[in-house]
Amino acid sequence: MTQPAYFGRGSIQRIQDILKYLAADQVFLVCGSRSYVVSGAASALVPALAGREVTKFTDFSINPQWSDIQKGLEAYRESGAGLILAVGGGSAIDVAKAIAVCSIQPSAPEAILRGEAAIEYPSRQVIAVPTTAGSGSEATQFAVVYDGTKKYSIAHESMLPTYCVVDPDLTESMWPRLAAVTGVDALAQAIESYWAVESTHESQGFATKAIELAIEYLPRAVHNPSPESREAMSLAAHMAGKAINVTRTTAPHALSYPVSLGYNVPHGHAVGLTLGDVLVFNAGVSDESCNDPRGAAHVRASVLEICRLMGCEHPDEARLMLNNMLVDFGLPIFLEAFGIDSAEKRAALASEVNVDRLSNNPRRLTPTDVVNLYEAIQ
Image (cartoon, rainbow, N blue to C red):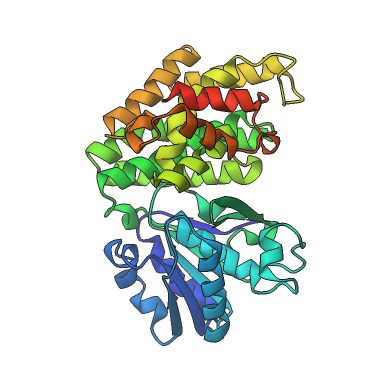
């Protein structure tokens, strides 16, 4: 599926033309209650939304719960709108995509969430406008939703937003910590995509661009933001999103979810905790432990290329660089900082990771490997 994408400063003004082209007189707006205003999106969209019936939905959490989607589905159906406009971070865009696809299926939404029923009809139209430089959700065909502490991913090619508009101006209001955690997420997605079992020449091209941009500009975007660094990180996040749309994520993301949900650690920070250690772990792949049909040598070469893109010569150096980056951003790198201060708690985290779902990681992980990775960052 081809997605028209508009990138650049002031590109949010294209929304007016898109809505006119789609003849959208009614709009269901999914947005963050605060970010919609402070990002400048609210004022920028006044001309585009003037004269249209707009229903705003903001009642969702930073890690969207199934109950949030249920509330959104009810509000969406009551609105009578067809088109959904998502403005915000990854949570807002994922909520919009989940509502858009579930609202049109004949099966119960709960069955769609759990994968018990197929997605039979294409998703309703979504326009995605990110206000952070991180998730890349505007460029992907899936949405992450939680039911309690259980993570689900709803996926279908029609869930790729009909249009996306990436305007770096909307990221200017990000405070340093937000720029850090979202930027680390983008970097992690790019790195994971590059070594993923499902990687392709195309996805590695997207990931390469994202890694190069993030390594150069993420520290600037956190410590000394400028129009140049904001624009570079917006592009990095978008490229990383395009990469994982092909490949999906791997072990660092899988290991992050119990940490985020159980201990309220921001997603990008949680992913970054194990990123360096998984990089070293994957570099040690053998023929016996390799998930990638292209072989262990291919995986090792991919990891070394990632190191090169980071300006490092070997995996241990890259791990140190990634951990130092987190420290430099004021993000703790040990689980103890979040109250995960015992072997029992780390074992509990490991028990929530389904190793059978880690087949996209290039090196096979056993339950013991998962425990060891958590122990490495105790």
